[in-house]
Length: 153
Image (cartoon, rainbow, N blue to C red; front, side, top):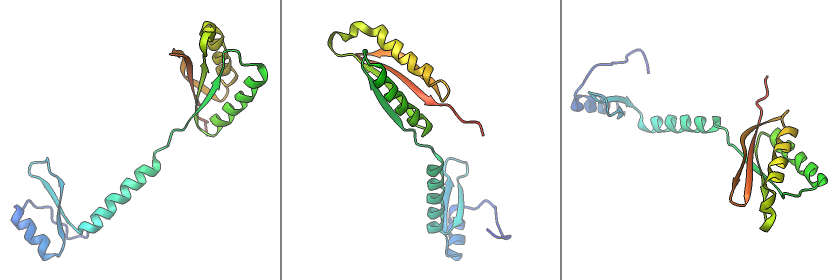
């Protein structure tokens, strides 16, 4: 776009003729406006710019990774600590952690144990994570979601 930018209102035929004289394309920018807004540009270059913008937008979006950690209602201390270390690593890497207690058969009677276990996990990780969803029973699984705390720069 140079200094000789003409922003006049033209009929379709006039605009097409001007674009043809300049050996460029007439591109409709805003079809819903009254009158429709068009621009005289090199269409291939226009497409390239649009694609480039989309790519930049896509690159700026963050991808959310969710890692799962499974416990049983009677998970012992060693296994708990082992899984706690994994959860810490996942959170430090920026992933969300979906911790769940899976109840098999009659272990559903120990719902309180499962909830206590998940709340203990949340308490042990409170330095680096915040609870996004409190423990909730869904079928045979009690699920809790933790997300990493945003580090202040």
